Amino acid sequence: MSRTFIAALAAAALAGAAPALAQHPAAAPAPQTRSLQGDAESWINDPHMHAFYELTVQAFAGGPDKVDDAAYQKKAYELFAAFGASRGIKPEAMVDHLKLIPGQVVKIAREDPKVLASYQNFVEATFGPP
Image 1 (cartoon, rainbow, N blue to C red):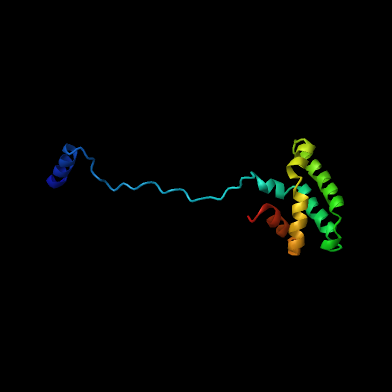
Image 2 (cartoon, one colour):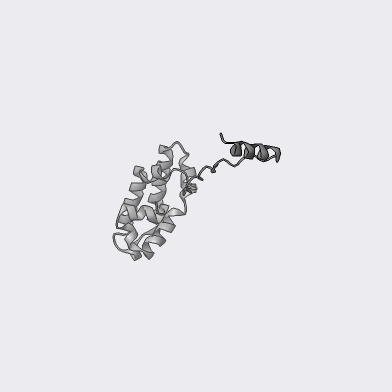
């Protein structure tokens, strides 16, 4: 080691400062988007959600003005109850959790019929974009 380097280290030690030796902070992790809903993928891939999509397509088969809202809601609630049971959740609790969804889906599909063009469109309208 050179005398100059040793002298600089000694001066820094006497001054109470540690020498600056090319230290860089760790890179911050990249930000990640997280769903507050939990594991949406397992819901999206569940056969009950596919059946709900099919039910919605059938309900709109005669056009948006011909949807029987009460019948659609009743069938949706039956699907939601079965969905809850399949996941070990009390059927009535799942229905209560999802009770507003049929009305919201009807409103969304009436405003934008393309929502029913594919399951992917339906998922994006109901769960949000990936």
